Length: 394
Image (tube, rainbow, N blue to C red; front, side):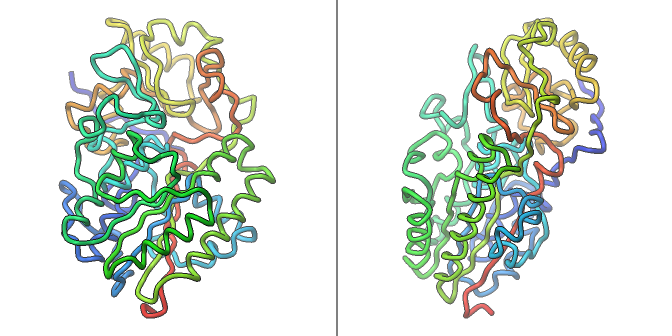
C-alpha cells in the first residue's frame, strides 16, 4: 500500500543528497584526482571540488567524529586553525540518521543510506529475530553482502590512485571498516600524533594519493561529558592542534579537507522519555532498534497500525513519527532500494528539540549519556567542509 510523502516538521530537515551532503565529498575529491566516479544518478562533483582542488595530486580527507559545524563556529577561540580554514561549499548535511555508521558508509560509497543499506546505528536483520549493532559488527552478516556497493576508494584504486585509510588499529577488519572503506589500504594508528604522522606519510607515498583519516575521541567525550563541558573544549583544542600539524606538513601539491559525520547536542533530564517506563510504547514491539534520537520499531505481526497511532499520540511534538512507507517517501534516506527497506522499522521516530527516547533497562549505557545525535535538527545535520592547500596550489 502506497502513502503520500510525509511532510517533516519545520525544525527538521531532509538531507539534500547529491547537492551538499557528506555523500558528495569523496566523489568530488576523486573527480579532482581524475577518477571517473559512478554513483547512480547523482552528479560526480556537485560541490565543485575539482575546481577548488585544481592541480592537487594528493588529497587527504580528515573526518573528525562529532565535529558539528555549529560547534566549530561557537568555539572559534578554542580552535583557531579550524576557524581559519577555507569553506568552499559552506555547511554540508549529514545523512539520516545522523549517526556514525551511517555517515561513514555514506562518505565511503558516495551514496545515500537508502542505496548502501547501513541505515542506522542498530538495525534489524530482516528475516531473523535479531538486530545488528554496526559499531560492534565483525563478519555476521558478511559485510560484502550487507553493503555490496562499490566504494569511491575502490573506484580510485582501480585507476591507479594510491588509497589509504588511516584510523585506529582497533577498527581494522571490522564489518563497518569493510563496508565503508573497502578498497583502501588500512593503516592503523595509536593516537593523534600517530594519525598526523601516518596521514602525511601516506600522502607522500605515491605521485597520486587519496588518504582518509578518522579520529573518534571528540565524539566520545561529547557523549560522556557533553558538548558544553570543559573536557569537550579541551579535546577540541587537541583536534585543532592535530589539524595544524597536518596543514604544516602538507606536500606542496597536496590539499586537506576536514569534515565530520554529524553534530551533537546535550540532552537534559527533563527531555528524556524512558521507553521502559511507558509499557504502552513497547507493547507490540518485536524489536527495538536505532538509538535514542532515531528510533526504529519493528512490530509484532498485525500490530503495525496500532503501534504507529500510539506512538504518535503519546509522543506528540517530541518526535516526528512515521510509518516505514511514509518515512521512505519523505526522502530522508534518499531513494531506498526495495531489498533494503525492511532494515527500517515499521515505525520511525526522529526526535525533535532536545528530546531523547531512552530505554534505561534495555539500554542502560546509552541511556546514561549526556550528548546525543541521530535526528534531523540543524545542530545534528550541519557539518563543516574546511580546506587547506599546499604552497604550489596557491
